[in-house]
Length: 217
Image 1 (cartoon, rainbow, N blue to C red):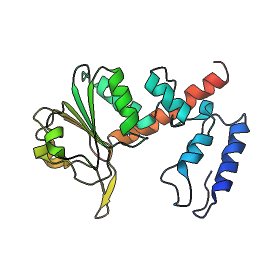
Image 2 (image 1 turned 90 degrees about the vertical axis):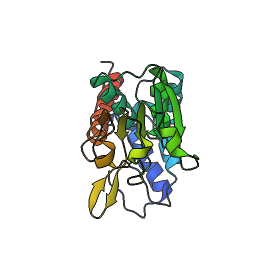
Image 3 (image 1 turned 60 degrees about the vertical axis):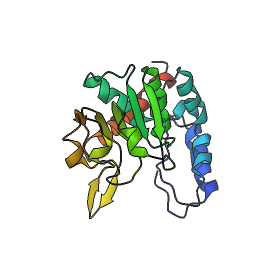
């Protein structure tokens, strides 16, 4: 459902209520960022947790941190799946996540802890960021700040996951200075074509899981 940029809060809430009540609708998400007049937290809280494809309702985030989750935020889940696919161990590893958003940073930290990693979350108020990132065995950047992560901030052999999406001179680039960091990293994800497609995949998988549960399948 596409709503106009001048949509009012009550109109968006009414649509979510309508979709929550519709048995033909199995999954909902709010496309972010929303227009400035919209309280996105209120919209997300309004979604039926049983139809929460993004895994961002307070109920599902609570289940995530308690370790009994059914759906997870898609980008965070995709990153874990990517690391498992390449058989990159996380247990006892130092993982640094730059970014503390509810969409990526915080849920990814919860999933990393489930893998018995030692997790540090850095953010815009973190001092001496480079000193922290150089200790990371696995470094994830999700800030939306182009080329934030330089080669001198990464230790040799680190795994670097770039979640950033930034437009610079008409091109889509990540948070990581890819051309220079790739010379030091053992693995590194590109932008575009790295984490983004996994986000789409796991969002679709969440809808399938929710649909099956709603239909007792």
